[in-house]
Length: 182
Image 1 (cartoon, rainbow, N blue to C red):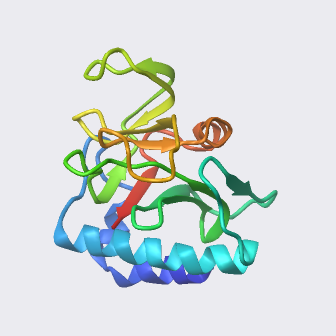
Image 2 (tube, rainbow, N blue to C red; image 1 turned 90 degrees about the vertical axis):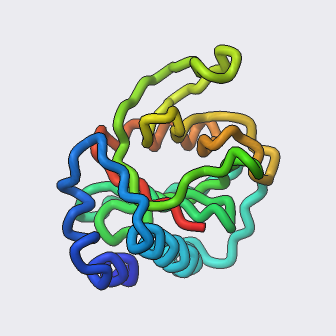
């Protein structure tokens, strides 16, 4: 599980600036997108090591009763439609997601959580409910509980199973990095 820490350390200055970036600064550079893609690839390997051969169906998640040493971070694999929660270098949880559908793509790169609300309604999309909302960009893209059809289907947000979204909401804070890789 130290592979993720090594990959982030290998990305040089990017790895150093993630925890200390201003709360409104997303990093969508080529290097940030590569670091996020590398983190997603390593997270899939860590999932196998931590949970064994598991195939999650839409709406399922796995959460280990372990505590890592270090700050939390979220890694999203858009290709696998999975979210991974790390505490330090320890993979704690993995969940299915539903990300942005074609034309409403979820952005890739490194994003801090900018805002958190236990219950929020979308200003852009017909007052749609967004429980356990954690906004990651100034355009309204967020992690939140929602419908999981097993494919990208949102307007750019990252939908999570309700119970997982609630647990994730409790362990993250404003500023927690979210690495989104293709």
